[in-house]
Image (tube, rainbow, N blue to C red; front, side, top):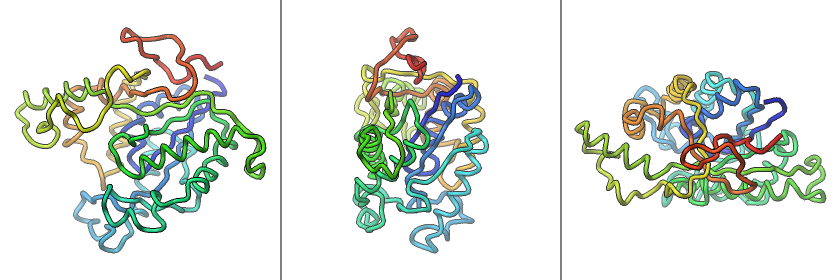
Length: 294
């Protein structure tokens, strides 16, 4: 897959592995140039480890530094060598969940000037010149302010990067050919919830109404399913590097484990710009983000 280039824009450390870890590892192995841009260091994240609880935002407020090193370790597992923060050096802070005081901090990503943040990403797009870019949908997957802002920033940056007269100091204009949004099919989530209940679980994801899920997308909207199940072990190992945030034996991962590699090794997307191209799987979904790109 010579000279294929992929750009992924994620909100916080660990988001990249949860949603696209198998994809990244698989493409690295196939020779694709994979570039990850992480918008914040996840400073407002909930700390799951007692021995670093003092680093939390309401304590020493040094969680971002710790999560940077977790991200570095995860990228080593996945084989990604080009990973960077948006607007380096560290510029945008985690905005916290919707409705929290962190939303109102002037340095939060949610409060960032859209043109300024998009320009930071234009510089990356024009440097890397990716044919394909990936981020979240307009709801940010589940409504987190930073995910929504990442969607807005990438969408604007892709448009601006293609305009020859815009910020010539940021490099030569470049048109991204295909843009994808990550997707979690509701049908798969429903199957996982029912499997959890059959296994005796009745809290967390298992307590959700499988017919009225608060997030996820209708199966009919999912256009692309990339199967890198052979990368499942690397993805789970990379997730384990994000130990301050992720417990791979519970929560979403308990749901996923009931579905096996179908949940974690196959990653799903909606095409937002560009054209779908064959081959397609038995469900009529495109099988690779680079289909149709020479």
